[in-house]
Length: 140
Ligand code: GDP
Image 1 (cartoon, rainbow, N blue to C red):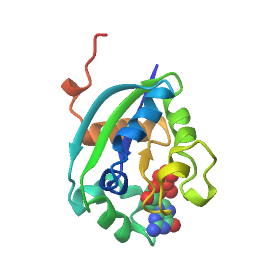
Image 2 (image 1 turned 90 degrees about the vertical axis):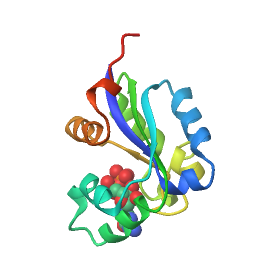
Image 3 (image 1 turned 120 degrees about the vertical axis):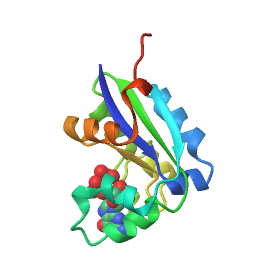
Image 4 (image 1 turned 90 degrees about the horizontal axis):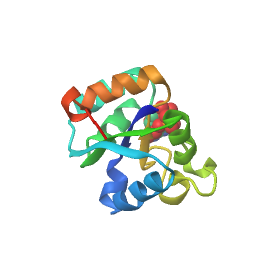
């Protein structure tokens, strides 16, 4: 069993797509271990996306991620990291495959509905950025 971290981004929350995104995730076999609604500051967004600090879109990305409420969550499944990336689709929705979350809901390369961790180390950093241990402890 593997855990990954995901965000329903502000564009999707604004448009009322949160439930539909979660339904696609659950239908794909992920278990929702933890979820919460947050509004993060630009600085908190910058810390989360620190690996992208030198990218030209960093300022715009951190503005976007702090522009409204998000849902942060931890998902569990065999091969969760790679399988969620597949379900999300390409970063640019213009290149996303049919049946993916971004193909269905994303409006642009930036306002692309969902985040998913890209590797094990990233997943543990990202889970720890938003969740305390007691929020993730499960016995069933
Ligand atoms: P992801 O792993 O598919 O989310 O993509 P990246 O890690 O490369 O980028 C992180 C996030 O930055 C993306 O999900 C987009 O919201 C945003 N982003 C990526 N590339 C671009 C770009 O070229 N322009 C803009 N404006 N935003 C981008």
